[in-house]
Structure formats: structure tokens, C-alpha cells
Image 1 (cartoon, rainbow, N blue to C red):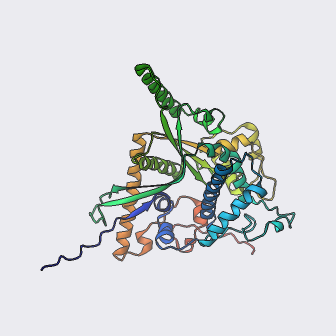
Image 2 (tube, rainbow, N blue to C red):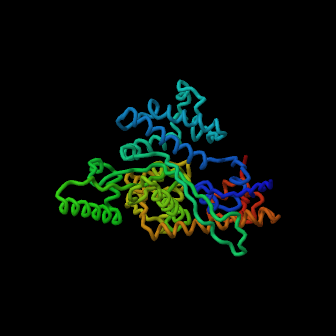
Length: 411
């Protein structure tokens, strides 16, 4: 009896939208060391805060869903326990908080929080979580249908020039922070701040009008009431400032939402997805570096959010030092900068998918080149266009592109 040989192992590469595709676009070489080489950054402030704020918002929603506690929430009584729980979980995974001047870790007992009057317990990270929950959490939580929704699908592997693909397909996955399922007659939208912004968006208004016309025609034709037309909104949290509309990040974040919508659409229980919303939570309480960047964006006419005369006067006279008093910006300006609405249609989705196909193709090319013995720094390009990304990078000392600063500093 002839036995068949074991079939050759077949691997389908899997790529995460944020962990792989957006990371690769940030910097190819940094992606290689951190994601494929598993070299954890020594100063992962951006990485830590991004995961932390996602965890805090999810846990806050869970508690609100159980208790329906009204807003605003008290930081020490209601929010600090959530922060401590998320911090403990992250430390168990090896993700430790930044310096004490930014955040007080969970190991410090509550009775010791107010020992030093010059350093209040509610540092900038805690102030941001408090603002995120009390400003946007109270608007988002009532709209949530599902949180942390895992979505994935297969796509055909883009062809390379020399046709050396590792597989015929690749898997793309992502996690939607918040999925809102609504219908056109929801009463909740009347006083919701998010809907006040949505109603200013032309694409959203036209879509809702078309749904209402469709529902009305069904009622008139059949003489009875039909189920309200339902739709979905994808919501994503970002622990960062709002990028300039001329930056690569601006475009790439839109691709992320559009790809989420494609992945969601192919699920059986999906409803029409009208728009996506990105919340830039750092904008609710910008730090020194953020304020400097915001000022520069306005001076270079690279922001899509208008600033009033009083806010600009306060920002313009500020010299950019953390030793002087921070410019007092209006709450309206900060809230306006913290929300971005992404239009969703088939043409934009197809473009986003093509862009990410191209990213996967480049990752595959670099992976194959390295497997053939090409040195890492030649197989993976150092191509970040963000100075702050390069400054915080652990690999800048041997990066050909990084322009080192020669200013002498006193230890």
C-alpha cells in the first residue's frame, strides 16, 4: 500500500491594520525591529498611552452600562479605580507607565496621592482620561452597540514584479473600538453632541434624508409601518493630537476607517455604514509639544479647524515654553479639534484597500529580500517623515536618515 506524503506546509500571512500596516507606514525600519524583531521600545509613551486610553474607555463603558451612573464622574472616586485596574493589567503584560510626572501607577495607595502639594495626583494622563470620559464618554456610551469588535477577512495577495509571493492570499484584521447601531428615528440623537457635529456633515445629512424617503415610500405603498431603517457608525479612539490635513497620517487614518467599513460590511449582521468618526483625545488637553505643533499647523495653514481671534491671540503670544503659563484655549476649539468625521463610500473604500494592498506588497518584498540575505537596513527603508517619531526612536543612533542634534545639554 502506497502512503501519500505529507503536504507542504502552507502559510497565509496575517496583517493587523494598526499593528502592521500603519506601523509600517510610520517607518519601515522601525516596524522591522519592533514588530518583527519584537524589540520593545525603551520609551513607549505613545504606545502605552494609546493602549491605556483604549482600556480606560472600554472599562468605563462597561461600568456605565451596569450602573448608568450620571456624568460628570469624579476623578478620585470613579475614574482613578479604572485607571489603576487598566495599569495593573498592562504592567502584567510588560507595559509600564511613563515617568511619575505624567502618571501615578496603581501601586501607590490612594491615601498617599495627595502627599506632595506641588505635584497633584491627577497628572496629565489622568486629566486626559477624565476629560475623555466626561466630555466624549457621556456622548459615546449611549450610542454603543458593540465595543472592541474583532473583524478579519482574506484578500488576494498583490503580485510582485518577480512573482515571488509567499502565498496566494493574506489575512487582514482589525479591532473596531466602538460600533454604533442606530435607526433614523432614534430619540437619543436630539441632545447628543456627536449628532450636532454629524448634522453639519453634508454626506451624513444626505444619507439620512435618503433613508427617511425610503422608509416613507414603504409606508405609503403598503399602508403599514415598517421597521425603522437602521445604519451603523464606526468610532475609533486616538491617543494623539489631530494631524495636519496635508500629512500622511491624516490620509492613512482615513484608510483605516474605510478598511474597517469593508471588513464590517462582509459580516452577516452588518447594516449600512454611513460614516466613521475619529476622536483625537489628546486635543482635549494638549501638552507643550501638542500646543507647539498646533501653533505651527495654524501658521502654515495646515489645519482644517478654524480658530477664533481670542484663542489665536493667546496661542500666538505664548513662546512655547513649559515654564510659562499655558495659553488658555476655549473648550469649543479643543472639542472641535478632537472630532473628525470620515465619509464612507465604495470608491473611497476601494482606494483604501488598494493602498493597503500596496503596503502588504512592500512588507512582503522586504521580508523576502531579508530571507535571501539582504542586510536589514537595506531590505527595510528608514522613511519616517515625522521628527517626533524619529526623536523617540531607539534605533536612531545607527539610522542613516536621522539627523542627530548636536546641541550640548547639561545632565
